[in-house]
Structures are given as structure tokens and as C-alpha cells.
Length: 237
Ligand SMILES: Nc1ncnc2c1ncn2[C@@H]1O[C@H](COP(=O)(O)OP(=O)(O)OP(=O)(O)O)[C@@H](O)[C@H]1O
Ligand SMILES: [Mg+2]
Image (tube, rainbow, N blue to C red; front, side):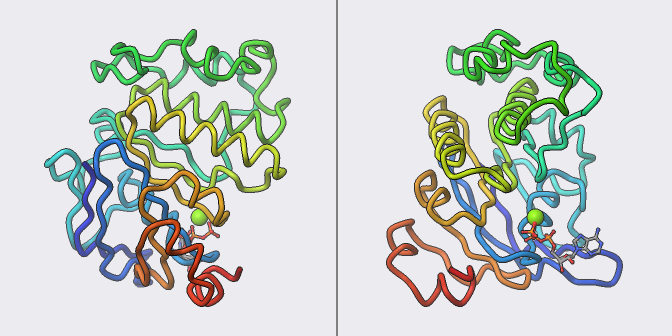
């Protein structure tokens, strides 16, 4: 569904992504792991059009998307759950959800139609209970749910999730894992960037390990969990 081929991305003269290639098949979750500064967010931003690659190709459902502006990429069905949630602090929960909403034709809510506020509230009841609260009045876990709900309101077929477990307590990280699995059950395809190895391995069909802007290892979650040297060398576990 999503395919990166030899992607090279720069910040000015700094060559960050150095020939990144991988694919995420339809309905699957691929996890991208790596230390701070490895290039995970740059990979997500390359797909979303926020840091367009200078070389290589990114295709989504067979269509080249690199070079398109972010809003066009979003409209094609790629949703972004950004690192650090990026909730609008002075908007209410409801406004955070409805502002980016877009009537799509992708039928991605698991019932063959577009996501509505009601669907998001069914998935995350706590957001309905607090819908009049401001974004900055939520806990970290609730903000993460809001960030995911906001992405769903754009009717994606594919979701880019950047470190959804960052800064959350272990019990909440388990809930994030449940949510990722649920989105997969609904038929969404997912690129999950994580530093939390067990969460990534629980949700992913395939795991990629990135170091210094390159994919240095790939395999099944079980293979990574059994490979202490890769975990030690590249993930600091
Ligand atoms: N806006 C920027 N301008 C210049 N360099 C940047 C910029 N953003 C990131 N970098 C550099 O690019 C490299 C990759 O950063 P990136 O944010 O992709 O890492 P990451 O794997 O997402 O790390 P983290 O786990 O800390 O979020 C780092 O060396 C970083 O310093
Ligand atoms: Mg990052």
C-alpha cells in the first residue's frame, strides 16, 4: 500500500535519510524503531510531505506522492498522529476533533462510511465525557487518544503514528497498544514509529530498525525480541 524506495531526505546540507526502502502492505502494521535522532520522524515527515525527499520515491496505492504538498497527501488518505500529540491547547476537545474533519469517501470507520464525531466518541468515551474541556486540560494518555481521533476524522486509509507511547505510564501504553490493534482490525494500514520495543512488537507484522538514517535490520517481532544484540546495539535495551 505504501512503498518507499531509496528515499533520501535532507535538512539543508545535512543528509539525514540515506536510502530508506520499505513497504507497508494493506491492512498491516509496520513498526519503525530506533534511538533518538535515528531519523524516524524524518521518515514520517517525508511520507507526509512535511520534509519532501530530494531523492527516491514514495508511492501510496501505486501513486507517486513525494513532491505533493502535505494537504494533498492527507487527502489521498494518509493521516498523521504527530510526535508530542500537537493538540490545540486553547480549543475544546470537540473543536480539536471537528476542525480538521473532512468528509471523505474512503469509508474507513469500520462500517464502510466516513468517521463522525460519534464514531470517535464510541472509540474513546472519555473524550465525549470531556468534550467541553480545553485540549490542555487532558492527561497525556487522553491527549494521545485525541490526537488519534483527530487523525481518524480526516478519514485515512493509512495512519502514520509517531511515538504514541512517549511519556505515558505503562498501563496507558498497554491501552495505546489495544488502540493500534483495534485500528488494524478496522482495516487501517499503519506505520508505527516507537521506542517502546514491546508495544511495537505487539502491534506490528514487521519491524524495521533504523540507525543514522538507514534501515539496519528488519524482521518479525519474535525475531527482534529474540535478538538481544540488535536490541542492545541499536535500541539501547
Ligand atoms: N528541523 C531540523 N533541522 C535540522 N536537523 C534536524 C531537524 N529535525 C531533525 N534533525 C536532525 O535529523 C536527525 C534525525 O532526526 P529525527 O527527528 O528524524 O529523529 P527521530 O528518530 O525521530 O528521534 P526521536 O526519537 O528523538 O524523535 C537528527 O540528527 C536530528 O538532529
Ligand atoms: Mg522523532
